[in-house]
Structure formats: C-alpha cells, structure tokens
Length: 439
Ligand SMILES: [Zn+2]
Figure 1 (tube, rainbow, N blue to C red):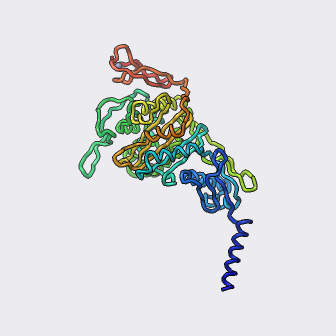
Figure 2: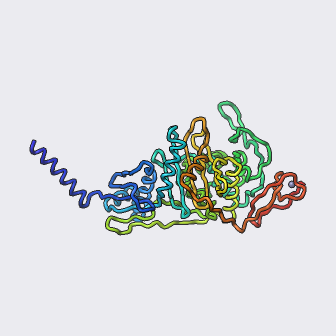
C-alpha cells in the first residue's frame, strides 16, 4: 500500500516538474484589444462559447503559418506552440463577436437552426468568425456563387454588359424520375420568356440567365477564374468536365454546387473585391505569434492581388446594389446605408446565404434548414449590422472609369428619344452601348 502511494506521488511530482520546465506551456489567444479569449496548452480552452469558432480557426492558422517555413503541417505547428508558450495576437473584434452571438440568439438558436457568420474589416482581416457548431465547415454556396463565377469574370472579359440580355427560358430538358423536365428551374418556379438585362437577372437571381451567361463566358474560363483569383478548389469540376462534359458542371459553377463548397470565412474574403476596387486579399485571423520569451515567431504579411479591374469591380458593386434595393436581398436593406450583396439558397433550403458588403465590412451569413421560413440570412445580416453598430455614414467611392448611361429595356442598347422603357446602367467608359436600333 505504502509502495503504491509513493509511486503515485512520484508521478505527480514528475508531472509538476514537466509543467514548470520543458512540458506543455500555455499560449494565450488575444483579441484585437489585447484581451485573452482562449488558451492552448496541448488542448484548446475557450473562455466563452461564442468565440469557439474563431479560436479554432486562429489556432489552426497560427500553427500552419509557424510550421510552413519549417516544412511542417498544422500538427507540427501545434507542437511548436505548446512547447514555446506565448501569445497569438488576432484581429478578433469582441464587439462583432458579441453581435454575432446576439444575432444567433435572436433568429436561430431557439429553433435549433445552425448558423455561421464571418466578417472582414477594411484591412481584409477576419474581425469575426462565429459558428453555432464551433466549426467553419464548407457548404454549397447556391446563388451566392453567381457574382464570383459568372458575372464578375463575365464583366471583366467584356462578355457581360449591364444591359446585355438573355432570354429567361429553360436551357435544356433533363430526365428525372418524374419524366422530362425543364432545366434550370428559377427560384420562383416560373419562366418569363422575356429578354432580361444582366443586372436585373442578377438582382432577381434568375438561374436560367446565369447558366446562359456561364455558357457564353465559358465553363473552363469560370473554373480558371475561381481557382486563379481566389484559390477556390474546382478540381472535382475539372474531372467531371473532362470525363463527361462541361454541361455536367453548369450547376456547380452557375448555381453554386461546387463539390468543395465554400466557407463563411472564404466568402467574407472573396466579396471584398467588390469594395476594394477589384483587389483580393486572402483574409487572415492571426496578426502575429510571440513566444513565451517575447520573441516574434510570425507576423502576418497581407498578400493583396488585383483579380478584377477597378471598373469591373464598380460595375459589379452597382449590380449587387440592385440585389439589396429591389431584388432578392431587400431584407438586408437599411435606409441611408450603402449596402450591396447577394443571396444564395441550395436545394430544399439546406444552405441559406447572404453576403453583405459595406464600404468597410464584408459580412458572410449562412444558416442551415429553417423549417417553413426560407432564407433568413439577409434579415440576419440586417440584425447583425444593428447589433454590431457598423458605420452608417460610409459610402463607396465611384470608379471614374465607369460611365452611367440610360438604356432601352427592350433592346439593351443606349436609349433614344422614342424608346418605350428606359433604365440607368453602369458601363466601363469604353463599352457604352450604341444607340437603340429598334426605336
Ligand atoms: Zn429602344
């Protein structure tokens, strides 16, 4: 008996000595105000549940960044962190994190609906990452992919002009268990069989027109754009297109069924191009990592790259304004605030998105199935904006290389005196359409 007691005592003493010299040390995760919100000592402890997703994301990012120059992976980085102790300084904004938790309480938590949100600030840093599950797993983007995969690269290439039209009608017939059916189906379940200007088709999120523009712009071009601009994984789509046909990945690219999915953190980064004059900066949580002895082990260096011209980015910005002003995203609208964005919904309302862009912040909102309530992401964005008290008085800076012109809604050409219906469009200065030939 005495022998066993001694053995236990020895083990305890050994553990204590390990902890004090050379064992696992504590790494504090600090928010942008310098306050600790979590710690890592081989295991992650988060002080408040609302910060769980941010803490996990930041810890993984720090571990990867530390291990990278040493040729290791996240696991090696975690071992380095636990050995050295110290601090991971992050861009987490405690006010925005609290506002995310408040939005969850208000809209989703009571109903058991999964909810996630990420915010990038004007430096493209992740100011908030929130998830009710604590994870930031990928989901189908639904129509929230359209600006990235079809409209932005289409505008950039010159294939899409604000008022250039496509007919809102089925692209093809597909075989289903119920027989031959029209494809794709619009959110409304109807086709207007009218010629619809590109900006209006995006505002109303017409699937027919998005698929037609994708075909015009080119499936391979769209895959190249997503991969080269944003590092979005389209390897599965490339395989399917090569083995079967490009037709088989129209839905993946135009309607948001990319096999790899997208995350709220990813979307909060990609959509910044519409606020940042076409510049994409991969969003980061971690600002720096400092060891227990005060040595700086890593400092973030943003890597901005121009993926759209400023003119294309501004045309897209104004198109996405139409979504919020009179399209599918009106629930996000706040009088007097310059908000642009896009909704997205996958089949059966499994994934529901709104990505909202203001001059300073980009907010990606996702929620899971919400029985009988449809997509509430734009409304949740609106609630988050108020809870976070985001700035009201900012405005986007117009691009001087973009011209406004009145166009004929029937032909999509520049309106003359006799055109029966006219609207205002935005065009790169060298691409304003010719005078309407119909009227
Ligand atoms: Zn006309």
